Amino acid sequence: MSIRVLLADDQALVRGGLRKIVDTEPDMQVVAEAADGLDAVDAAARSRPDVAVVDIRMPRLDGIEATRRILAADGGAELRVLILTTFGLDEYVYESLRAGASGFMLKDVRPADLVEGIRVVARGDALLAPSVTRRLLDRFAGDLDEPAPAPGHLDELTEREVEVLRLVALALSNAEIATRLVLTEATVKTHVSSVLRKLELRDRVQAVVYAYDIGLVRPRSS
Image (cartoon, rainbow, N blue to C red; front, top):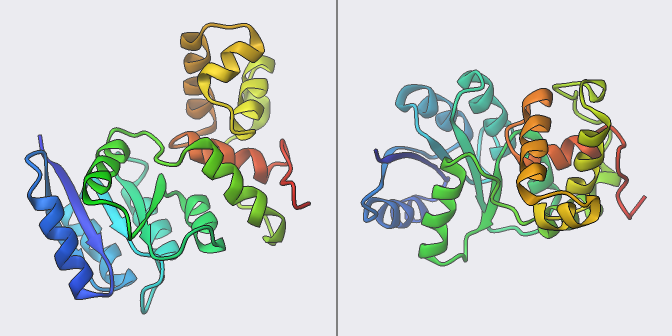
């Protein structure tokens, strides 16, 4: 089955280039385009994409609020948001992750990396490497005002799951967590999946954001 893709960017030239890249792939197709955030929300509701590729800075409604509304309207189904932006490690990226995006890429990325990124997000995986996520949170988490409401409660986790969540938030891979806790990598993967299910989180990136929001780990800047 083809991956259905929505492209949301206020620059027609950029959208045209992205469409050409995506539509040449045998396993994906562009099902809608949007020139601003409000159009993106409407287009997502109409076309039911698997992945929405969303720019951050758009007129009428920015990519952060568009992401929040797109995912809220999706009702927790399989739709994923990939942020594609000119801007690197800025507060907008952190806020987009907090809003529910599954990752982000820069617009200077190679076409092959972009389509692979879409595939990664469509599978339900997080696109950000743990080290990138950590740098984002360390740089900006201490500057944000009120934490977002957490979808689940920490007391729903076992002691081991809390420990795994803390290590995930400290940018450790499954293999590194397994070594630290003297577990198999498969067991760690099971614990991570259980944490995501119990806390109603979409992916590993959202687990890191959750851990910072509840104070389980603290940004270095604080």
